[in-house]
Length: 207
Image: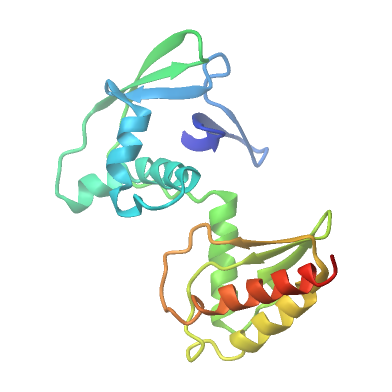
């Protein structure tokens, strides 16, 4: 069982065996309403205190990710894992309550997006940058940044970023994907405002 955001709601999903896909855990009640009597919004708010200045959508995504790591938090703080969780599902009109038996076992879980970001980070650390930039349909530039790298530690990254944003000069928009980015060096922070401001001037000059 896992959680995924859908707009401003949390959906509960499960993997489909041999299909490499996911489906609703409960099709008739796809959304998560509460855990052990605590509304999901309140739970998320308590878990994202370090990201209180982040955009609303980002805090929601981070909160769902933290909920899935609650077992690790119990382990780190040497707390006994509860035997059961009472989960309330909803479809927006009616609710359904389920009691879930917890297991004191370690299960690895990576979403496809998280796995892709991890593989991308490993490639970048080896000087392989080709997966960082993609041109999407509609002439939209996508730049994925799984970590905030130091230019001194990743040789060639600075020149690659300059070349990619030169390539993206005539795109309709540029998306900088920071999902799963834990932070790091400040080298990149002054880089993007300069590049994006230049893009604004470039596009403005053609109007």
